Length: 173
Image 1 (cartoon, rainbow, N blue to C red):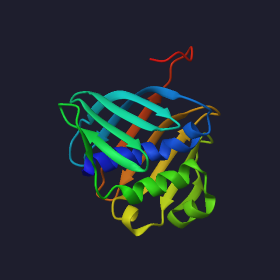
Image 2 (cartoon, helix red, strand yellow):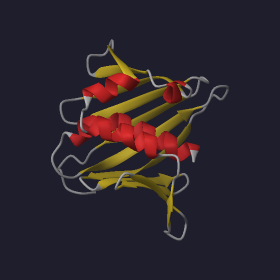
Image 3 (spheres, one colour):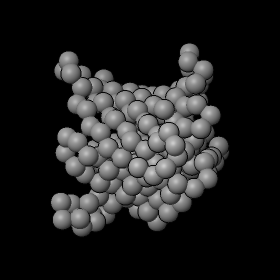
Image 4 (tube, rainbow, N blue to C red):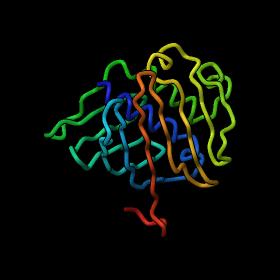
C-alpha cells in the first residue's frame, strides 16, 4: 500500500503539466529509489498513459505491477489482472484533483511554492501534516510541454527520482 501511495504521490507531482495538454499523454518512466545507507538505488522502469478518464501507471521491471486511477479511486492489479481497490488513497486523489484543476487555493493549503536554482524547476514544500510526515520537499522540472523529472525528498533521508520520456513522433507507444 505504501509503495502504491508513493507512486501516486510521485505521479501527482508530474500531473499538472501533463494535464494541461489536450488528449492522450503517454510515455515511459524510470524511477530511482535511493535508500539512506545504501550506495546503489533501486531502479524500476515502466509505462504511463494519461487520458481524461484516468491514469495507468505500469511498472515493467524489475517486478511487474499496475496502478490505475479512475473515477476518484486508486486500484492495483494482481497477477491475475484482478483490480483491488486501495483504501485510504482517497485523500491523495482529492489532492491530485486539485493539482489537475490547478486549484491554487486548494494547493496553497498543502504546498508552499518556491523558485528553484534551475529555472525549469519548481520547489514544493508540503504544508499538509500528512505529507510532512513522509516528505520534506518535491522538485518538479519541466519544459513548456512536458514534465521531465520529479524528485521527492523523504523525511527519513530516502530520495525518489522519476524521469519521464515521451515519444518523439507523437505516436502511441
